[in-house]
Length: 175
Image (cartoon, rainbow, N blue to C red; front, side):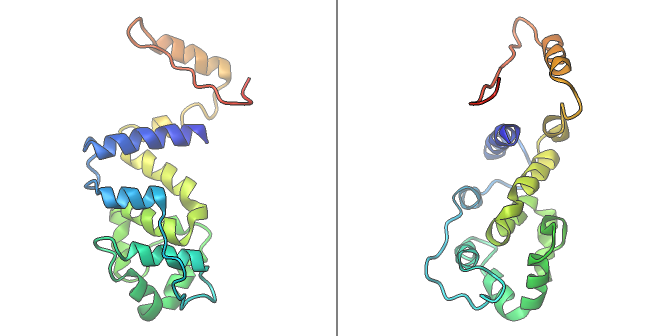
């Protein structure tokens, strides 16, 4: 959990500075992902399968550039296909319906849709975005999974120098 937060902060900072070029940075998209604003009291035409809060998020998403037609596509053009996508176990790995399948080539924008429709899947999707976006992202996200604490500390010590310090991040309850 803490590794995901740290790696996300690092990746977001590099993304905002333009050091990561997989997609062009858009401050509106970034703010939407972090804040998840939603329209309160919006009538939900898909209430039989989509919670009202999620529909409120979708309505706010349509205010962003390139997402203007998203709610209409969900409601009128392909509601059954969107419901099928919504009900997937891992929707982040499945192409969205209609022209929204193009978001597979724009993974940060796909995170916005996932944030609206399936926020329960955000941790895994964000971790995968970091793995694919951050240079050597897999090394950061998947490191140390099979190593013992002693091995991790030994490797860290070997990597350090008098000008490359070791940072210890402590959290409550960690001994």
